[in-house]
Structure formats: C-alpha cells, structure tokens
Image 1 (tube, rainbow, N blue to C red):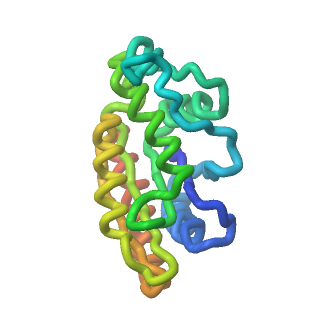
Image 2: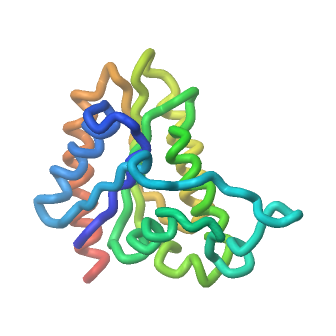
Image 3: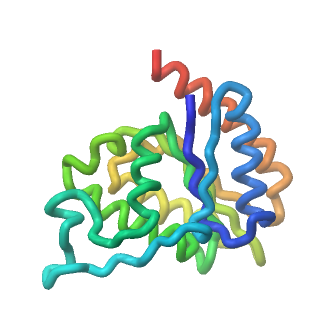
Length: 187
C-alpha cells in the first residue's frame, strides 16, 4: 500500500510538515508514504485558456501548462490514497495548495481525467499557526474542492498551533487507521 502526501507549506520544518510527518509515521507501519512539497515544484496558476474560461482541461482532461502539475496528477492516480496537508492562511489553504487544487478540479471536469482520481480515498490536514484560528474553515474549503474532484474524503483534521502536540498523536493514529482501511479496501 502506498499514499502520496501533498504538502502546501513553504517551511520544511514547520507545523504543517510536523503534522504530516506524524500521520506518515502511523501509516508507514504498514505502507509507504511519498511526500511532495508543492513549493519545491514548478506549478503555475490556471490561465483560463479560452474565452469561456476553460480550455483543454474540460475538453481533454489535461492542462496546457507544461510544468510539474501533470507528473503529480499521475502519481495521485497510481497510489492507494492521498493526504493533502496545508498551513492555514486567512482561514483558507495556502496559495500553493489552492493553485494545485484549482487546476486539479478543472481537469476533473473531464470524465476521462477522473479515472484514477474519482473514488480515491483522501485525508485533509489543515494546520493553523499564529493565533490558531481558521483551521475548521480551511477544512471546509478543502473538503469542498476535494469532493468536487471526485475524491472520497475520509477525514478532515483541523489542527491549531496550541494543540499540535495532541493532534500529532491523533494524526499518528489516523495514519495507522488509514493504512488498515486501505488494506481492507484492496481486499
């Protein structure tokens, strides 16, 4: 069993990575987790290619922009599950996570592009630093986008700077659970 953990944080030692690492430690007792930090990849924002605001994404299920987006989507299609982890900015996802998910939901309008994405189990992790607010609203926004892509959202985990130590234990246990769940799904 394998999962892809997509991280929308700029800080490789920050709270979001700590949360994702706790999840991975639980999961890796039975499976393999590969991490991708979005800011380390070249991912442009959607160009809204044609006059209607769409383009090849809707017609062909692919994006016209040649960057790292396509290779990440291919990895998503190959794994058993996906974890999306983002810091919370202004009660919402990080800009790198929004950019990636905006393009993903556009190609997901095409039925052919949904193959390998639709019905894939996912977990969302939203980590608020600073004052600690906005994690719950961030989970709401992320869940809506993930569902619109066709993923099956198994859990959304809001974390605050103030409770991250406790949430790391919860994330570890959730990682263990996700491994068992994916193992059962595989049959």
